[in-house]
Length: 228
Image 1 (tube, one colour):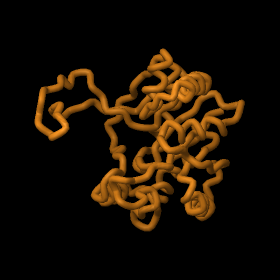
Image 2 (cartoon, rainbow, N blue to C red):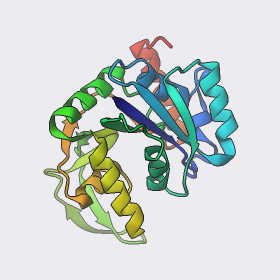
Image 3 (cartoon, helix red, strand yellow):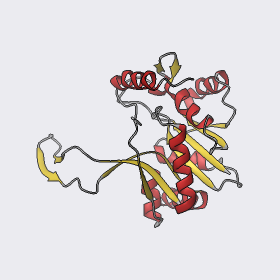
């Protein structure tokens, strides 16, 4: 059994409003993200993790679009890793592979999700990623450049990130028990000593972070002629 945890519990501080409930065309961002997993044959069920104070709104979206794979809508935590942990706690014992995805990435394709899951079954843990192509600089607190950073071998992590359920459960239990914080599943798995493979993604998979990203996402969806 393959389950997905879609994380939609962020505060959207950089947006100034809840980006996941914002519309791309006539549908909210989170609906596009859920639909990609709904349409993916490799995914059996979905757990949606949301802000506790917006739970009713997210549930209405699930009901409105008749997402049949979403079997659980749960409250998130104060940080992303705690939201993921809340989702993990709802997984069935029959789950063998789990894919974690940020709802703020509405452009991921069902085909890409399937490729991540397939590779995770083969090697244990996988993350979508893209190589860093820009020149990288480190700066101080006043944004003065202090040094150059060699970009060879540097990758930007994306989601979904998928792994064996027993690996992910062990990795996150260690993090939660220690009181440390991680920003993604790759970091948690790394700290627990599990190997992670990267799957290079050449397709658009932007994370909605700033208001301008909504316009870009809509243009890309129209360009792809995604039917939803």
